[in-house]
Image (cartoon, rainbow, N blue to C red; front, side):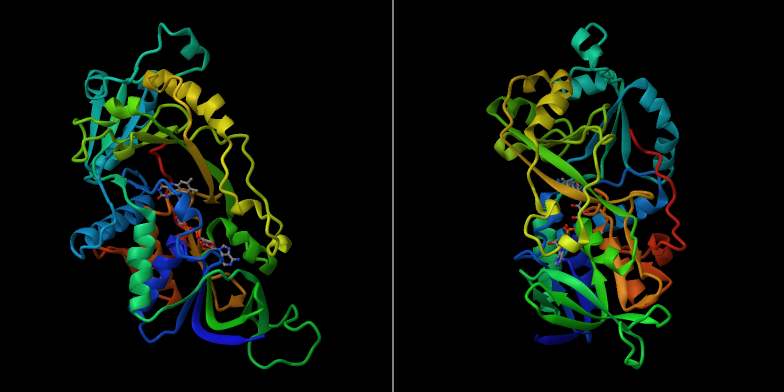
Length: 447
Ligand SMILES: Cc1cc2nc3c(=O)[nH]c(=O)nc-3n(C[C@H](O)[C@H](O)[C@H](O)COP(=O)(O)OP(=O)(O)OC[C@H]3O[C@@H](n4cnc5c(N)ncnc54)[C@H](O)[C@@H]3O)c2cc1C
């Protein structure tokens, strides 16, 4: 077995792993760092399956700090550094009935007090801006059977939009990391962590035994290579449990399957060409009043991406960590079930947007959220009792829009700093995203 030695080995070259790698090498240029991924390039895991939307419309302080500082850094990369990220403020539009609007009033007030650029639209305004939208189902029996909610209000978030997940991962973070001297090792699956006692080995069988202090000695790869480092960082997203559970570490993260469905048709051109919202002259990203069903416009090829839907009754995907070397890992699957669109999303959406009626599904794919089961926010921590291990995971469906802040927080934790400085200068207490002193305030803006 060959053996290589680094200061830091990061496992996982998704957006979390690459943002962390970049901030580590940027702040500590003398360090020898390696990023390992089982895929053949960076950002090929769930980062590639993502809708890559960003927003700042949150009422919770943690959500707002992570997302707005990340967005501002991405804007800086594109506008000041001249690296194209296809970042466009196409805006977000939340459609809601009267009851949902009343329910969210306090959250809206909080957002306004935090100087977020949002606008409340009333029904007439919404109908004028998107004439294709049906807002009232009082006379529609089919829609009533489905329990569809009317659209009485909307909240329009201005500093929200989309970017290209590949570009931010590879054209910025990976390029810069490599330019600063970072190494990568792709097409290499890490299969095992090997624990060692801290200090001298005593020659007891099965070392390290229970009472001995432990550290990660090596990781083993599928190719039989041993990688040695002072610190290992696990940034394997939805696959995190495969490496953490055998170590007895619980990151409170579960893989949750999420599918996206694409409908492409020239009939959608009228809906997609809309001058009422943004410089791109298209409709915003729209969230419908039912089960978080959402729709992303892709104007250049007359298509929309549809996602969301009820998650109650949907299983978390379990994998047996002992099966990590097998080729048929369900977490590697990117297949979506078209029936989810036909029998679930389509039935509701085509009532709100009759232009969709009878249009065939043209494509669909799926990925997994690394879902934090405590508060749906990232987790960045050093597990108790194992030296030289740091975990950066749980994007929970909003990892693109929080990635830069998460990378900075992981870097600060590596140096045992109490605070991380986010882009723009705000100080963020690192332990807020940890497990022991976790302090994530409740998010009230949910429909
Ligand atoms: C359908 C979908 C839509 C989404 N939409 C949005 C959105 O609109 N906005 C938003 O902010 N977020 C969204 N997300 C979430 C977002 O994509 C992620 O939170 C973000 O990309 C961070 O991912 P990550 O780096 O943690 O994981 P990943 O990108 O999955 O990276 C983990 C990496 O680890 C590697 N790996 C795993 N196991 C091993 C191993 N044993 N050895 C070596 N390598 C390994 C994988 O190959 C992978 O490259 C969405 C996610 C999905 C699935």
